[in-house]
Length: 153
Image (cartoon, rainbow, N blue to C red; front, top):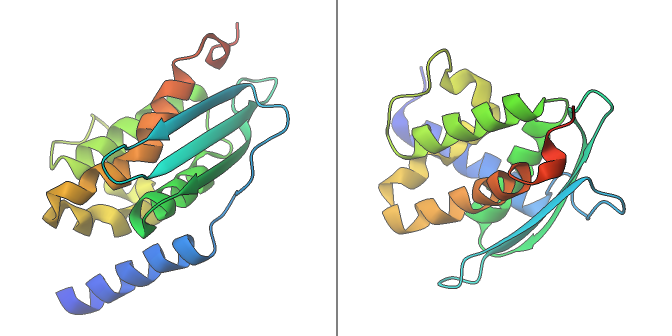
């Protein structure tokens, strides 16, 4: 059984891996949705682009950003989780992660298991000033999903 220290080390490794080797970097040339998030207090920035398939699901995703390891790892992990998700599933994933970070009850029917490597960011809750770092990509996603092109009829 892993101790708390071992788990913290594993989570730190996941965060550092996504920071050093971010997935889905680079903006899409032809995005259906695009949004930018910026935290003026620390300088973290994330630009998110999404291409939706004919079924309205997330077909491709790309991001560019700069800032701390937490914001950039959160963006990298988020982009991995978004691929193949419907817009509705992306909203649910966003709500689940936000609830996890707020120590709130998860939305009905959702579990931390669906967050995959995002659970590595749960330790950030011990440092309230850093929670905004982890949430910046998710606020950016929320802005992108609020655009009219997010719903295809």
